Amino acid sequence: MNKLLATLIAGLFATSVYAQSTTAPATPVTTTDTTMSSGQSGTAGTTSTGNADADKKIAKANEKEAKEMSKQDEKINKAVDKANEKKAKAHDKAVKKVDKASEKVAKADPEDKAKAAAKAEEKTAEANYDAQKTMIKADEKAQKKIVDANADKAKAHAKANEKRAEATAEAHKDAAK
Image (cartoon, rainbow, N blue to C red; front, side, top):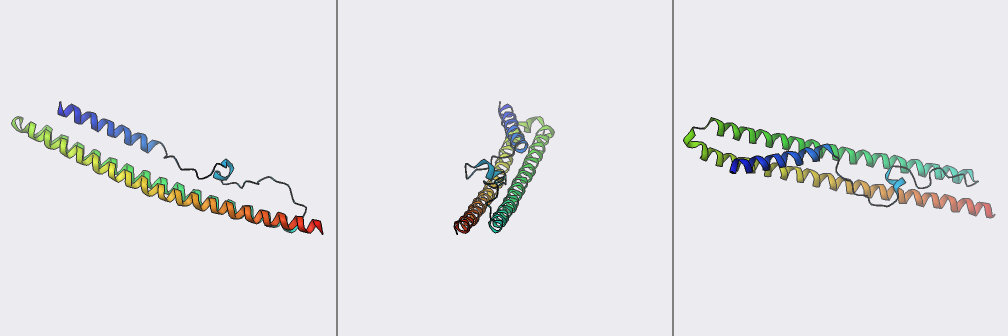
């Protein structure tokens, strides 16, 4: 019964790890503006203000924002990739420990099998715990980097909006003269 339980737990663990490694973790979204999260400014595709200088400033603000969005998206992808790599290594290490414990049970003398099986269950539980702990830490570190990157994206978006608004106001002021 204990072997069956250990096998079921190990199988459940392997399944959950596989599912985690095949799907990217959800990235928290800090804004509801879907165009911003894809790296485009909120005013992309707008027509000119009629003032060449203002249009130039708006284009520069849009370009800066797009560069910052791209840079932060790259940071997010790098953090997710690194976390997935750590999680895969932790899983492989746990699988090796479980396999080694199972081999020892198989090689044990018939009178020592029960003791070896109990020890193997303990090793399996320890390996699974260590792997899960490593995976949690990797996800936690990645989430921190993702939050920081999203905050930087929001700041870049706000700064670009400020520059666009200043340029538009300047254009309107010049037009009023």
